[in-house]
Length: 221
Image (tube, rainbow, N blue to C red; front, side, top):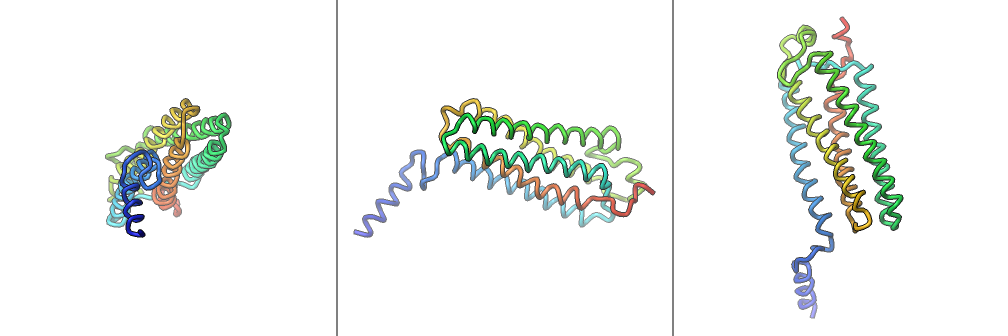
């Protein structure tokens, strides 16, 4: 009898439908996407770390003010968006779809704020500092002779990919908010994506920004 029950459970688990292993297909798909995307960001961050360690003179150009202060504000904005997303998921689970929509909109505004701040940072680095994906500014080359030009390509590559994920997430949240009356677990699934994007930044921020602070004031000399 126990064997028959086990066989019945196995059949139910593999019987298809929208809830394989009692997890909605949307949530399962999102978890699979998150796992695969984690490998992508993980590979990029490991490559960045290797390039940094292997470089004879890796540049550390970010001054505490304004660079680190500005990127810290960006981080706080993104963390705040994660909190508003939590409130949105909670409201959705309680059936308060109007409140859920408001919290989702708040998350979108914070996400867009992060993107705008990021673009302002890029504009400063490209137009004011002279940094490009393929070359370092002359001032940086003088401060760190023989510095690897990979700094620009890795910086813009990793932060650009993350910014693309944030912008995609904002669009995704907009679709979810527009269809919220027809949703089941879509708000929670969108929340998984958004928290993942925030979590990735928690690795990008210290590795690329905090470890690149010009503690010795090399650029000021």
